[in-house]
Image (cartoon, rainbow, N blue to C red):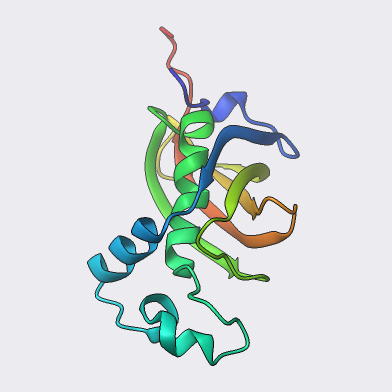
Length: 152
């Protein structure tokens, strides 16, 4: 089992995920068009030449999805019951095509589930950094996580 059982997690535990990802133009165009986002910020290089950034910005929803997706193998793969929500989603610096992102995850809260005795609620803080170690994204994510079964 790649993911962690609720019982294996501790507040303050940090996962520095081995997977890094260089963001491509294809990533940005596919994600942006698949989600029907017509913003010039993500699709129009000529328009963006005249902005403060001077080039296309990677869709921030892609950054959010990548932060969470990279974390799954180390934290919730096979042990998650459900994603309960995201809070405090922030993008303090832009992501551009060609940036290589690394992700780290911290366990910031654990509590027993009131309705499911075989599970608990975990809150993760995900952080994404580019190749210059600039924080480019962060969020808190709450999930319902299975406890270790008695026979495991």
